[in-house]
Length: 626
Image 1: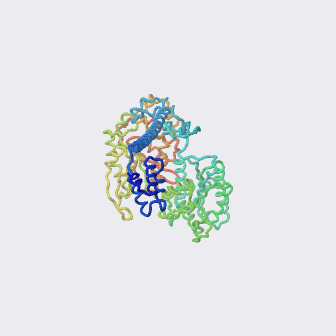
Image 2: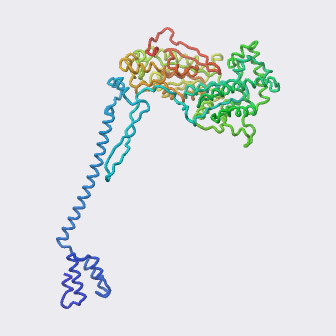
């Protein structure tokens, strides 16, 4: 219409040219931009022409053919998009299916896993032993795929097959003999006599050996002196007597040489030099002597500071008491010895200056039974564990009334049936023992045996039903401590760390059934009871590891403690305090219906056993020979 209007006979040459361009654009022989550009050239249509012509072009309607072409183009675009999305989905789905099939092929047993120990009867001992060896891990596979003509490799993670084998050897934390970074550790005790250095040294050595598998030994200068000379009177400790000083120095030198020989034999060992070491010159001399270890020893000084000394015969060396004319003489001489040391005592880093040479030492200073702790330059995992334990047990020398009581739960239904593990309730005999334990706790544990005055006491159990119900009759009451603070007597605390060793697939079985179903497992357990781990269960090494926080708490507390627990757990705690090697700890026997009382000291642990049901026989619970 526009072309006919502008191409009338009366039209000017410019209008005829416009008509030609409009027709060309309508038939798609030129683009719209070319047409508009031509129309808007100056002088073609005049001042108002561009706007009028552009509006005219905008009003052009598409013919039928153009509409069909546009609709067809849109349809093609949508079809291509749908096809691409479908292709991507098919590719991703195929990869997922292939991975799932590959995982099932590599681990066919993963299709069904029994959820209870009763379902484990379908697994034979040979099937348990066919699993990967200890430490084996399937962490990647090789997959080849084509990409742009190149073959590449890709590492795909596969879930690790859980190791069901028992651990055959090794401590909870072990040392690598060939590791250059593994240092020896030397603990040097510092302090006046009668402050508990020997008690802390011996307890720390037991802790490191039992719970960390460390090779540790205490080198006590007093023990060497007793073996060489025997008893020494108080006058012989006078620092002004040169002859006596030279003799005592010889004992210190020989003891230090023994420790150096011990440390040179193997990396990762821990030596504890137990002596007074009260002067700066003595401590400097020790560091100079230890330079022979070629820098492979980390030296930590441990100082116990108290205003008064604790002197009582039970805590003194037996050889000293036996060598004296009478026990009273040894106590008096001990007081004279303390007086001589006090005249020359120089506490660690006591100069009060930042440039004090001893400020460069690594040391642990426990003041007044741990009411104040000062640490200096302590670094590393093992020094950290040592520090935590010493700060918890530094008051042990002074806790003369603190006693530990161990009791198994009352007879359970599984005990009567000879089965292990489980969470069964008490039998009638177990209930009678629970009532007897209540009377024992109220009359023996919570009361001072001499004054009959109430003393603070604690009660711990596991989280299992049989221990909680055994201790449920023990009454709680509020008493006043010596400092006037209120104390809730025998408030029960339930620890999952005290739960019985988990037997895994063997839980709820008798030992005869275990031997019948898992013959190889029974033989492996008999061969090495400490390191053996039940299928899907625990070993005694695992139990030791989870009991380490319990020992830290026992050492921290200053009240008597009753633990109502299980034989497997109490075996480990009993062995630690009795000084029994952990290889022999699983073979200790704790009878039902009995309470064990332990009173630890520096050189020994006194023990008493009480039978609360003397006229009843618990019988064989299946664990005496196992």
